[in-house]
Length: 173
Image (cartoon, rainbow, N blue to C red; front, top):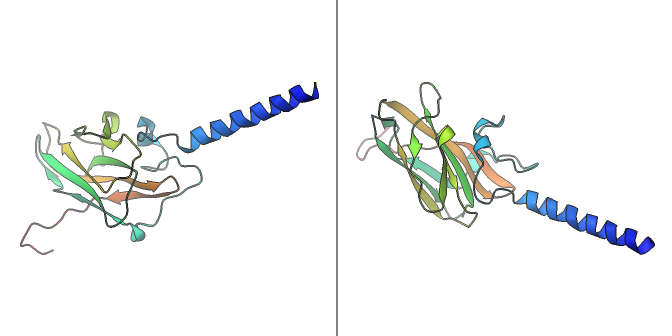
């Protein structure tokens, strides 16, 4: 009987360890749809890990424009400046109302979350860069901004990033 209890305890310990391991890498295929409505906007649920300071952001996030008309397409890119990243979550928001707006084209290794005009990674492989195309609504015009999170690894990520819009060539701000 003593041996049976030890075997049961060992199996219970192994089962718990497997559950913890499964939880640590819970979303290797991108953010779940409920990320859109969590209390910590745009932040992944990575246990005790918290967002890094944007002053130390090793990535560039740029948008080809922040002005849209009916059906306009805007390109948004993430580039590592020597650092690879594993994941991302980007949303498009109307600059005046802060509403989720428009839609993203799904590309290889991405998935969209139409409920909140978002795009996320579809795998957790290292990435040097990623480029996305956002489509404006067919019946609106205005200004848009792109915000989100870049994940370097499970415990290291940056949230509340806002894509920069480079000045047009030949024009200085």
